[in-house]
Length: 433
Image (cartoon, rainbow, N blue to C red; front, side):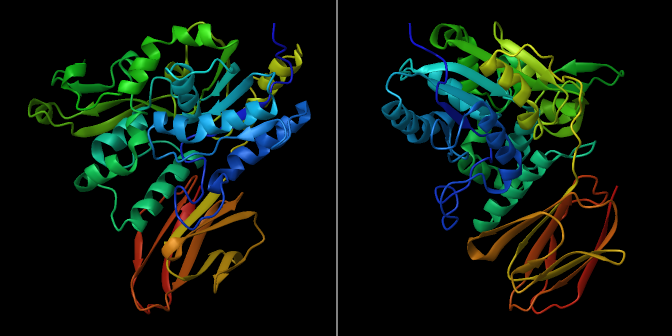
């Protein structure tokens, strides 16, 4: 029998968890991009159980726009080959966050599986899809949140805004075909058949009725196959685990217009939410039969770090109780995305939060500053205070520029603002509660 102790680990991040030249030319070597605050702490945690990057711990970065089977062939299989050449007498463990678990399952349950995976650990993986993905896939727009948005929501909105800007297009139903072509992986995140009903309408008598699946425009063939053949996991890996988050408002299904439905149009009126989820993925989507599992009170972002005690227990056989009901402290982040070489001053009362002058950042807050082609830029500030903010923007260039501000607790709508050519002193305010 093969010794399964100290298997090398491949970590597969989630949707929008990788960045490099394969995704946006000019961004350089692979990394986590703006998702580094999600994943870097977890990689450091794994050092506590003697897993070290590029020694016995490897990261499968990938182009998350592509379909999952393509990701398996182009990114996962070549990395598996490299790891097995270094560890010829070991199988590999896969630890995955969010869509990374779909990538892993596409490999394990696919025809090209090489029986080289021992443990599969999925964290907040949408095994039955998400309503958020269906909303975007169906409408061409990002789903509004009734409750407080979270960091991962801003990653999604920010990257999509940035990439469509680079393509000189935008969100919207009129650009739906472009969105489908650009982000085929999104179509593999919409709810599978075994998710259950996802569309409802009000029948005029105060009762909700379900929309039969055959009325729906879209179907997720990949997840349908993976879930119909989920028994293969038990036969092909040594052990499978899943970890789900709860107590965060998460979209569970959608309300549509009854009259438009008669015309075979999916006009979405409202989003119905549940606390049985992590803010992005519902528990019922994460759950897989006959697998060991754990529930954590954590958001889709913080569940990665929160999962470490459970993973530590798997690898060290510790019997200590897990802090299942310890809700992680949610930090407040401020995201500023813009085009052009803008000078931006953000103040809160008398305090300068950030001063961007000539491409140089001056701030006392921890920050990420990412630059993309065509002078597209993204700044994220960590743990900013609540209160009223004022923004001054100067545009010294001969063309119009765009700016959008996002953040947890932001009261104003996250709408793009246009700064005219040579416009100086453009001002706006926003409130963070």
